Image 1: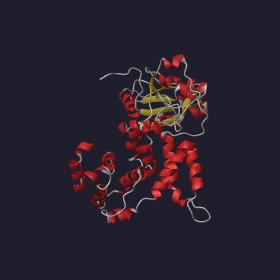
Image 2: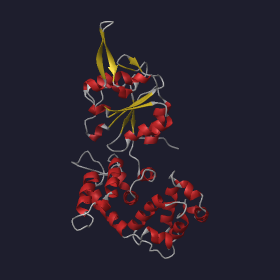
Image 3: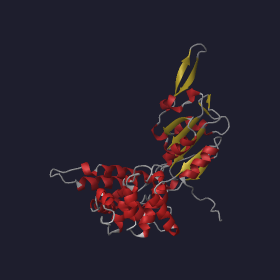
Image 4: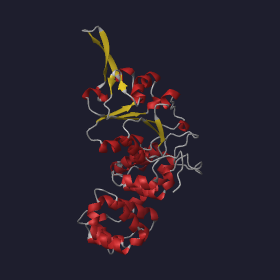
Length: 361
């Protein structure tokens, strides 16, 4: 196995490093919208007893951190930290200093003692030794104003966190109620989750590119917003009672950019062409099987959310009529879904498919 020194790592790898080294201070760098903030949840699942403290440093003023209070017995002033830091609990804290590099300089200076590995503190209050503190920001090449001074860099361990690729994002999406149209579109357009730091992406119309003027682009964060838009699509009606396509396109354009919105709209139209779910379950031998690749993708990813113990048998019978690629796509993704994998693995029809198609997995 070769090692690529200086390479980027995944969100999960970064979470592992942070959780296992509470005495160190990691600084996660990555392009906008890739899910850096989700690392708080990944670590939090492993540290349920830690006080959770999320700080958007770009929005903080000095008064949001601590306030001077007069101690009249000693005739001195003391700093009382804001309760959001959890320092008053005396318990370990899981603290994320999000957008640290965009904070005002006085805010950075006040938070700086938290970045010390030896005797970290907030004001004059020491941090619990089991606390976990890390910071995040964007890559300097993103051009969004992230600055770290040399004395700060010397106290932290920078990590370049990469964008999730389409397979990693889809594995997350099937567990997080993402609209099937969005998942199927990403499955067919995997380069929508490429990075501008990758080779040969200069002409990619979907992704963030600091060399271009952009109002929106595709990212894990914006795809989740597109999902919310499409979930209310059926309720967006014009005066004649028809789905307001202009409103949908306008909202998608604002979320993922014009190129992404235009191409995703085609998958929205595929959704309208699919056979009714009831016809699939009631007549798996005769229900229409979609002809286009896009429609197959929408149906397969949509089925994952609808499968239960009662309908998996007829659906597996229907699925056998699809091309092997789509059969494998459904079975692999439902196997990764914690809410649905038990339904699949307890079904004889699913086990039979696995036995017959071991070469596809």
